[in-house]
Amino acid sequence: MRNDKRVGVGGIQDFVKEYVVEISEKYPYWNRSGGADHFYVACHSIGRSAMEKAIHVKLNAIQVVCSSSYFLSGYLPHKDASIPQIWPRKGPSPTNAPSRRKKLAFFAGAMNSRVRENFVKTWNNDSETMVHRGSMKTPYSEALLNSNKYCIHAKGFEINTARIGDALYYGCVPVILADHYDLPYADILNWESFSVIVSSFDIPKLKQILQAIEYHHYVKLQNNVMKQIASTFEAT
Image (cartoon, rainbow, N blue to C red):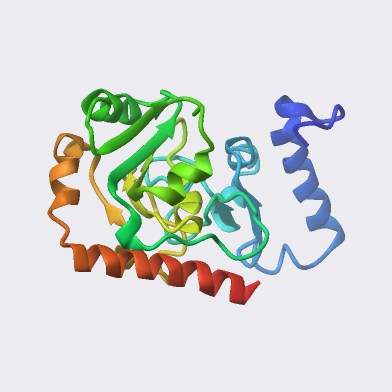
Protein backbone atom coordinates (compact mmCIF):
# COMPACT_ATOMS: atom_id res chain seq x y z
CA MET A 1 0.00 0.00 0.00
CA ARG A 2 2.88 2.35 0.70
CA ASN A 3 4.02 2.13 -2.94
CA ASP A 4 0.54 2.04 -4.44
CA LYS A 5 -0.26 5.46 -5.91
CA ARG A 6 -3.94 4.92 -5.12
CA VAL A 7 -3.14 4.72 -1.39
CA GLY A 8 0.34 5.96 -0.46
CA VAL A 9 1.77 6.39 3.02
CA GLY A 10 -0.71 9.12 3.96
CA GLY A 11 -3.74 7.08 2.91
CA ILE A 12 -2.98 3.74 4.59
CA GLN A 13 -4.93 4.39 7.80
CA ASP A 14 -8.10 5.46 5.95
CA PHE A 15 -7.77 2.52 3.53
CA VAL A 16 -7.49 -0.01 6.38
CA LYS A 17 -10.45 1.51 8.22
CA GLU A 18 -12.66 1.35 5.12
CA TYR A 19 -11.43 -2.15 4.24
CA VAL A 20 -12.35 -3.56 7.66
CA VAL A 21 -15.80 -1.98 7.46
CA GLU A 22 -16.29 -3.60 4.06
CA ILE A 23 -15.28 -7.13 5.08
CA SER A 24 -17.34 -6.91 8.28
CA GLU A 25 -20.42 -6.08 6.21
CA LYS A 26 -19.80 -8.76 3.56
CA TYR A 27 -18.66 -11.69 5.72
CA PRO A 28 -19.65 -13.09 9.14
CA TYR A 29 -16.14 -14.00 10.32
CA TRP A 30 -15.03 -10.64 11.67
CA ASN A 31 -18.26 -9.93 13.51
CA ARG A 32 -18.36 -13.23 15.41
CA SER A 33 -15.47 -12.08 17.63
CA GLY A 34 -15.01 -8.41 16.83
CA GLY A 35 -11.76 -9.38 15.14
CA ALA A 36 -10.24 -11.11 18.17
CA ASP A 37 -9.64 -14.33 16.21
CA HIS A 38 -7.93 -12.44 13.36
CA PHE A 39 -4.32 -11.37 13.02
CA TYR A 40 -2.31 -9.17 10.70
CA VAL A 41 1.43 -9.00 10.05
CA ALA A 42 3.21 -5.64 9.94
CA CYS A 43 6.99 -5.74 10.31
CA HIS A 44 7.61 -2.18 9.09
CA SER A 45 6.82 0.77 11.36
CA ILE A 46 4.38 2.19 8.78
CA GLY A 47 2.36 -1.02 8.93
CA ARG A 48 2.40 -0.93 12.71
CA SER A 49 0.56 2.41 12.72
CA ALA A 50 -1.88 1.40 9.98
CA MET A 51 -4.67 0.65 12.47
CA GLU A 52 -4.73 4.03 14.22
CA LYS A 53 -8.09 4.95 12.67
CA ALA A 54 -9.55 1.45 13.07
CA ILE A 55 -9.51 1.35 16.87
CA HIS A 56 -11.51 -1.87 17.20
CA VAL A 57 -8.89 -3.58 15.04
CA LYS A 58 -6.05 -2.17 17.11
CA LEU A 59 -7.66 -3.27 20.38
CA ASN A 60 -9.07 -6.65 19.32
CA ALA A 61 -7.07 -8.20 16.48
CA ILE A 62 -3.68 -9.78 17.08
CA GLN A 63 -0.89 -7.61 15.73
CA VAL A 64 2.17 -9.60 14.62
CA VAL A 65 5.08 -7.16 14.44
CA CYS A 66 8.84 -6.80 14.53
CA SER A 67 8.85 -3.53 16.51
CA SER A 68 7.62 -4.94 19.80
CA SER A 69 8.51 -2.42 22.48
CA TYR A 70 6.56 -2.26 25.74
CA PHE A 71 6.60 1.54 25.36
CA LEU A 72 5.03 1.71 21.88
CA SER A 73 1.42 2.86 22.06
CA GLY A 74 0.51 0.66 19.12
CA TYR A 75 1.78 -2.56 20.70
CA LEU A 76 -0.18 -4.41 23.38
CA PRO A 77 1.91 -7.08 25.14
CA HIS A 78 0.26 -10.45 25.74
CA LYS A 79 -2.29 -9.73 23.00
CA ASP A 80 0.06 -8.92 20.16
CA ALA A 81 2.98 -11.09 19.05
CA SER A 82 6.60 -10.36 18.26
CA ILE A 83 8.37 -11.87 15.24
CA PRO A 84 12.05 -11.67 14.29
CA GLN A 85 13.29 -9.42 11.53
CA ILE A 86 15.49 -11.50 9.22
CA TRP A 87 16.98 -11.51 5.74
CA PRO A 88 15.95 -14.79 4.06
CA ARG A 89 18.91 -16.97 3.09
CA LYS A 90 19.12 -20.24 1.22
CA GLY A 91 20.92 -23.32 2.48
CA PRO A 92 22.49 -24.17 5.83
CA SER A 93 24.43 -21.51 7.69
CA PRO A 94 28.25 -21.42 7.54
CA THR A 95 30.05 -22.51 10.68
CA ASN A 96 33.14 -21.49 12.59
CA ALA A 97 34.24 -23.25 15.78
CA PRO A 98 34.17 -21.28 19.06
CA SER A 99 37.91 -21.85 19.51
CA ARG A 100 38.60 -19.91 16.29
CA ARG A 101 36.64 -16.85 17.37
CA LYS A 102 39.30 -14.64 18.98
CA LYS A 103 37.71 -11.19 19.06
CA LEU A 104 35.35 -10.49 21.94
CA ALA A 105 32.57 -8.56 20.20
CA PHE A 106 31.45 -6.93 16.96
CA PHE A 107 29.11 -4.09 15.98
CA ALA A 108 28.42 -2.23 12.74
CA GLY A 109 25.59 0.21 12.11
CA ALA A 110 24.38 3.75 11.60
CA MET A 111 24.39 6.22 14.50
CA ASN A 112 20.62 6.60 14.71
CA SER A 113 19.97 6.18 18.43
CA ARG A 114 21.46 7.25 21.74
CA VAL A 115 22.12 3.61 22.62
CA ARG A 116 24.33 3.16 19.56
CA GLU A 117 26.04 6.50 20.05
CA ASN A 118 26.82 5.64 23.67
CA PHE A 119 28.08 2.19 22.74
CA VAL A 120 30.37 3.42 19.95
CA LYS A 121 31.67 6.32 22.05
CA THR A 122 32.53 3.89 24.87
CA TRP A 123 34.04 1.01 22.89
CA ASN A 124 35.22 2.48 19.59
CA ASN A 125 38.93 2.26 20.49
CA ASP A 126 38.86 -1.02 22.37
CA SER A 127 41.29 -3.59 20.95
CA GLU A 128 39.02 -6.57 21.65
CA THR A 129 35.87 -5.07 20.18
CA MET A 130 35.29 -4.46 16.46
CA VAL A 131 33.17 -1.32 16.11
CA HIS A 132 32.19 0.16 12.75
CA ARG A 133 30.15 3.32 12.13
CA GLY A 134 27.92 2.81 9.14
CA SER A 135 28.98 0.60 6.23
CA MET A 136 32.03 -1.66 6.33
CA LYS A 137 34.77 -1.88 3.70
CA THR A 138 35.05 -5.64 4.22
CA PRO A 139 32.11 -8.07 3.84
CA TYR A 140 29.70 -7.92 6.77
CA SER A 141 29.31 -11.72 6.71
CA GLU A 142 33.05 -12.27 7.25
CA ALA A 143 33.04 -10.15 10.39
CA LEU A 144 30.09 -12.09 11.79
CA LEU A 145 31.56 -15.48 10.97
CA ASN A 146 35.32 -15.33 11.27
CA SER A 147 36.51 -13.85 14.50
CA ASN A 148 33.83 -12.69 16.91
CA LYS A 149 32.34 -14.45 19.90
CA TYR A 150 29.56 -11.94 20.51
CA CYS A 151 27.63 -9.72 18.08
CA ILE A 152 25.98 -6.58 19.41
CA HIS A 153 22.32 -5.84 18.70
CA ALA A 154 21.88 -2.20 19.74
CA LYS A 155 18.51 -0.59 19.05
CA GLY A 156 18.37 2.00 16.27
CA PHE A 157 15.32 3.95 15.11
CA GLU A 158 13.32 0.88 16.11
CA ILE A 159 13.92 -1.54 18.95
CA ASN A 160 14.35 -4.38 16.44
CA THR A 161 16.91 -4.87 13.68
CA ALA A 162 17.96 -7.78 11.49
CA ARG A 163 21.22 -8.08 13.45
CA ILE A 164 19.93 -10.78 15.80
CA GLY A 165 18.99 -12.97 12.84
CA ASP A 166 22.33 -12.21 11.18
CA ALA A 167 24.25 -13.13 14.32
CA LEU A 168 22.41 -16.42 14.73
CA TYR A 169 22.87 -17.37 11.09
CA TYR A 170 26.63 -16.92 11.33
CA GLY A 171 26.97 -18.61 14.72
CA CYS A 172 27.72 -15.46 16.68
CA VAL A 173 26.13 -15.16 20.14
CA PRO A 174 23.86 -12.07 20.09
CA VAL A 175 24.19 -9.46 22.82
CA ILE A 176 20.90 -7.57 23.07
CA LEU A 177 21.14 -3.89 24.02
CA ALA A 178 17.49 -2.93 23.59
CA ASP A 179 15.60 -2.15 26.78
CA HIS A 180 11.90 -3.07 26.94
CA TYR A 181 12.16 -5.33 23.86
CA ASP A 182 9.44 -8.00 23.90
CA LEU A 183 11.68 -10.60 22.27
CA PRO A 184 10.26 -12.75 19.43
CA TYR A 185 8.51 -15.96 20.51
CA ALA A 186 9.52 -15.31 24.11
CA ASP A 187 6.83 -17.70 25.35
CA ILE A 188 8.50 -20.52 23.39
CA LEU A 189 12.21 -19.67 23.18
CA ASN A 190 14.54 -19.45 26.15
CA TRP A 191 16.54 -16.44 24.95
CA GLU A 192 18.96 -16.62 27.87
CA SER A 193 20.12 -20.03 26.61
CA PHE A 194 21.56 -18.61 23.36
CA SER A 195 21.99 -14.86 23.88
CA VAL A 196 23.18 -12.28 26.40
CA ILE A 197 20.67 -9.61 27.42
CA VAL A 198 22.22 -6.43 28.82
CA SER A 199 20.61 -3.19 29.98
CA SER A 200 21.69 -0.11 28.02
CA PHE A 201 22.66 1.42 31.37
CA ASP A 202 25.39 -1.22 31.60
CA ILE A 203 27.15 -0.26 28.36
CA PRO A 204 30.20 1.04 30.29
CA LYS A 205 30.46 -2.40 31.93
CA LEU A 206 29.74 -4.44 28.81
CA LYS A 207 33.27 -5.73 28.30
CA GLN A 208 33.49 -6.73 31.94
CA ILE A 209 30.13 -8.54 31.66
CA LEU A 210 31.19 -10.48 28.57
CA GLN A 211 34.65 -11.34 29.92
CA ALA A 212 33.04 -12.67 33.09
CA ILE A 213 31.26 -15.35 31.05
CA GLU A 214 33.38 -18.47 31.42
CA TYR A 215 34.54 -20.13 28.23
CA HIS A 216 32.54 -23.34 28.79
CA HIS A 217 29.38 -21.25 29.20
CA TYR A 218 30.17 -19.29 26.04
CA VAL A 219 30.58 -22.60 24.16
CA LYS A 220 27.20 -23.70 25.47
CA LEU A 221 25.60 -20.45 24.29
CA GLN A 222 27.22 -20.81 20.87
CA ASN A 223 26.12 -24.45 20.56
CA ASN A 224 22.57 -23.38 21.37
CA VAL A 225 22.80 -20.71 18.68
CA MET A 226 23.65 -23.41 16.14
CA LYS A 227 20.78 -25.57 17.42
CA GLN A 228 18.36 -22.69 16.82
CA ILE A 229 19.58 -22.37 13.23
CA ALA A 230 19.44 -26.15 12.66
CA SER A 231 15.88 -26.38 13.97
CA THR A 232 14.87 -23.48 11.71
CA PHE A 233 16.08 -25.29 8.60
CA GLU A 234 14.44 -28.51 9.72
CA ALA A 235 11.14 -26.66 10.08
CA THR A 236 11.42 -25.10 6.62
